[in-house]
Length: 443
Image (cartoon, rainbow, N blue to C red; front, side, top):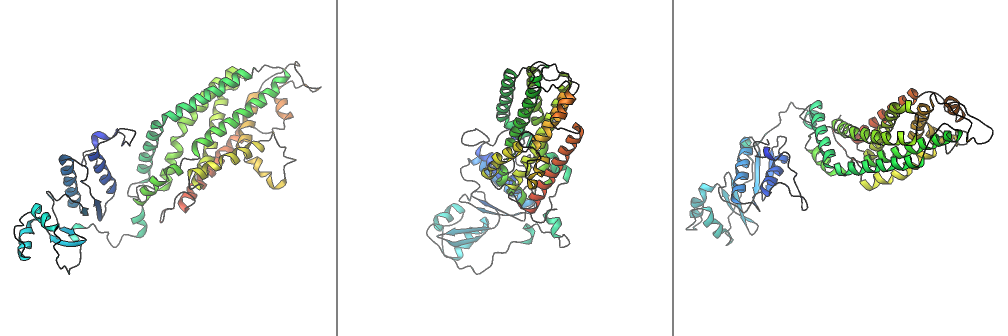
């Protein structure tokens, strides 16, 4: 279709707007028509498709319309440009029909009406402006040879389904999402600068060694790392769906794709950027602060997993939100709840019983504890800088003092389950309507 509409050479050109130079007016017209007939249509209504175009671009549009008609689509064009026009023509003047027929019947028609000197459309238009009236008692019947029909044995489900397969939809949508991510690389650069800046600040403030005071510094630093990663990931995904709502609703009406391929493309396309930012931050903060060298690779992996888990929560909230403002309104409360129930600020015993389950799903708590277990593994501490009479000699002992039990694998397993639940709930929300979009007849 790109070749048919002579747009193949513009695939890598931005459409453009008032601020960004893009494709020409004629190319934009052709693109608009192309988008209207991506899937087979019975009817196509075009309002002034030739306006604002030069003669060459206008003739190109007319050729395209002829091809569309040849393909079995009935096309209705509203226009003031009657040059080289074909097909059945209805002309109006002062709100009334003054001619109905083809371009070849103009002379005969007006001869019967005792209007002389009208042999072509130029002359006809001059007479039309005088308000010539005719009596037309017929009905507008679209001929069957100009209409694409659906056979009677096709069920409603099949007519609502997208025409391409699941894998093809996913592949194309994923490619589009990656292109959009690349086009918004300015935002990614800013995030990278932010990550580097925060890592340098931490590196300036924290100089960790093996004395007693460093035990508490490690706990505090790892908590800040978890909270910061949560904030960055949530902020990046809360607006993912609402900002595309108008476009996606239009595409859904065209039955271009299903919800699941669309969601998968949005979720997967953000993973490379998320992993890269996490690794960038970890690669700087880890050596600068003096954290346990033996746990570096695991630290990067746990940080990346935390980013993915936080993004899944953001995608769920995004799917529930009908607008960007509503989505962003969730940011503050979510962050506060995650921090309060991270296991450090409020003990499990003093937490009201009806709210204790929140500690179990606190993403900050899961990641912080995983980072702590990874960091303190195999460490030995001297007695310098101790606080009070208690002396902690090993990393394992420090972990027990803070009441952290179990292993990293157990917590990573919970994070994976959390991602699956959030993705499932987000897809179900979008399929069922939710705050984002409602798709009838989709399964």
